Length: 218
Ligand SMILES: [Zn+2]
Image 1 (spheres, helix red, strand yellow):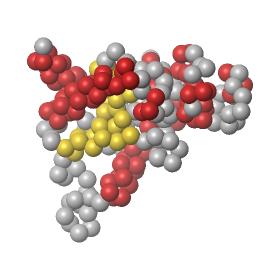
Image 2: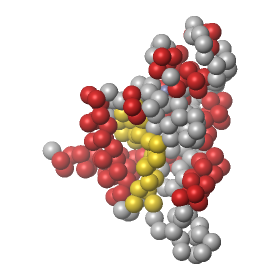
Image 3: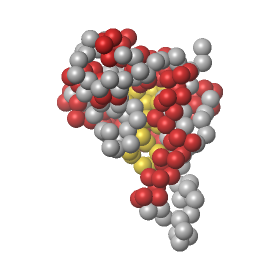
Image 4: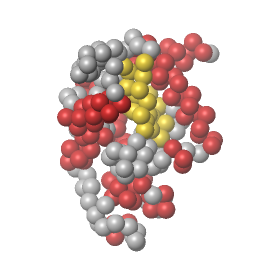
C-alpha cells in the first residue's frame, strides 16, 4: 500500500489518499460543545483530544497515523519523530513532532523537554552537514491564526543557502520577512510533491549522518 504522507500543505490530498474522512461527526466520539464538522477544534484542545483513543486520533490526525507517517520517517527518539516533508520547500525540509498527539509546545512534559531539545540539536547538526550549510530556518505554527494546518505540534527545519529563493526586487538576494513567508506558504501548497522513493533517499542521507554524529558522542 502506498501512502502520500505528512505535508502540511498537502493535508487534504493526503487524507483522501489514506481514505480518512476528515469530517467524521463529532458525536461519534461522544464529545459535546465542539464545533460541528471541525475536527481541527477537537485536535487543538487537550480537553477534547485527550478523550480520544489511538484509533480515533489516527482517523482524524495524519501525524497520529503510524502507517501514513512511516513513508517519510527519518529517525525517532523515545517520544519524538523526524520526518522528511512530502513537499519540501527547500532540500532537507524536515519536521520534528511528538509521537503522541499534542497541539502546542506548552504541552510537552517537562520530562520530555530535554529529549526534545537534544533530538532537535542532533537533527540540526545532521541537516547542516548533509546540505552543506550553516543556516537553518526553524518554524512552528501554533494556533488558528498562525497558518497551522495540522493541529499536531510539528516544527519545520529548513536548510538555507544563499541562492535558494529568487532574488528580491532590489537584487540583493536578502529576502524580507514577508517575502520569505510568502515563498514558504506558496511552496508548501504548490511545490513539487515527492514520491516515497525520493523521500526515503533523502531520509537515508540524513539518517546516516545523524547516527554517525550520535555514535561519535559515545
Ligand atoms: Zn495527532
